[in-house]
Image 1 (cartoon, rainbow, N blue to C red):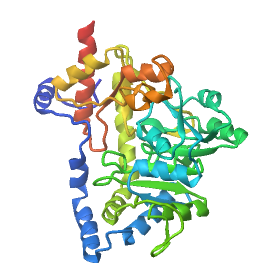
Image 2: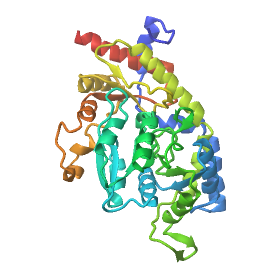
Image 3: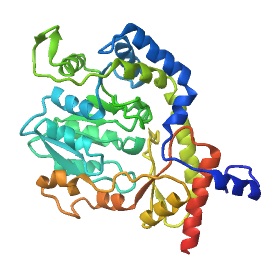
Image 4: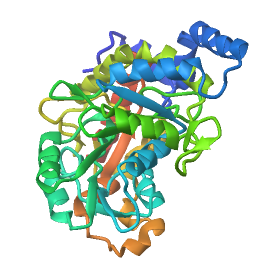
Length: 387
């Protein structure tokens, strides 16, 4: 039954006026507008727009949040991944193992170093990369394992770290969707040698534009990352290696500092919404949910359901003003950009099955109880009509 307390008449009135966006950043920003405005004004007054005061402060605060010794702010999640690979000397001739079911940025970062992305299938129930598939993909050229904490949940990191240790490999976490998630009590971003985060606006911790962060407890790597993001500069006009421009803007850092103070609370709200979705939709049609990983916390960057009738359900919900997403409709091995890897349909069956069945329901902290109830009611109506 729905969690609200409306009468049938009240429910009809709610339904008539209700729209449920997939993400509502405006609602989030409105709630903390005064703090955001003040933070931005302070940056404007100081005019320290490049690697200013708020960047260093945010790096320190985020490192503490992520349980890492250091954090280095960069321009995007993709930049974080690329620089993390470069700083452990990944380059031409090397191979990096990553899941087939991830956003293409994970593979693009590998390609940007000149290395070869090597894909591994996912566990069909948790959606996280399968450690057995990782081990099967290792060759003498493998240098890094790049697991993705998909949708906000870490995978079987004990198994992945054990594989890396046996083969002398580096683990770099793609934690772009996992701000605040933990595995056996340890925050994502502190499990591997380096962790990579995205602050794309719709993330659990999102900027007002692009931004990213690399976490590590290796002081030597952190020092080099700071050079690589800023033209390889060791001191003003003294360039000791070939870096680039991948700096986190001070304005974005100031905004992110404000939002970081609310992240734990926002994550709790996401978990509450997810639990309500699971409760209200349990046993409905052929729906399946992402299986929870033991000893891990899920922060639900996305709430994903599965059904054979995915596209029909999505259309039904859209007609009733419920916006949804598909993450991701085509695995990396079937993307034209990676045709040169030589894969065919069927090579990664679990990733392909998930791509054809997965649907992301609205998920953001500011969802109301009425909105969650309405989404669930419309999903139930869809399956009831199917017979």
